[in-house]
Image (cartoon, rainbow, N blue to C red; front, side):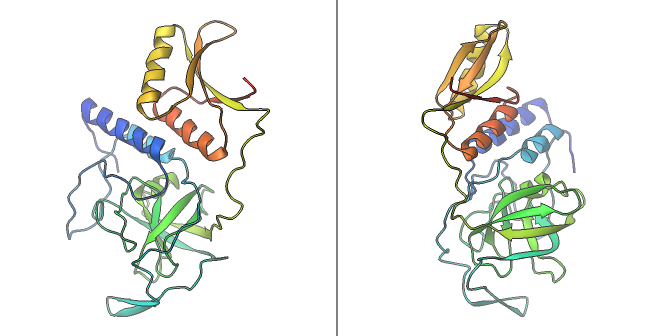
Length: 275
């Protein structure tokens, strides 16, 4: 669902999404679009093509060990007169079924875990998994996948197995269709953390192709304003300038920086060893 917005509105939203990309950790976030919630039907936010592109490039949240939330984990709970049971453990859980998504109607509301629902982050709702937990969700129609933090309860429709945030639906490319067949795999944080590169062989990102140092400085300033540090301007062998970012110590940091560079229209970076 695409709506026309003014240039100033588009820029405001793009900057907000870019900031979110830089700070993304999979936890509940700050609402970037103050949409009032109500009792009517759910709907998608009013976003431009560029904004949808930003959401489609959100990096996966880092998978870490989480403590069970103080709310939302009772052994049994009741919704609409039906009783549901919460699994004692999520270990090894994998299933296939139909996914749906939820958006503007619930944006800013408390989830079952107590976190605030942010439709621009990669989260999901599940009826029976203990929360919170991380899972990989794959769209079986197009092969696209993303990692989500399951921190809410739902969907309470027998034919659906998971309710994804609007952002996750965009990443899996079914936000217009509304539903899609998916595979859900709970992720064990043990052993999934990317290992640092060899300290004797650091890696850096080289990004951007600027004809003047002034252009490179403007790009550097945008990165620094988004919270990225360790950025330097370097001269390219064939003339012009680029940015050097790093060293890069993990795959998760590489993914977040890559998404931020794309969001800021600096370009796809190159990973360079040792310099």
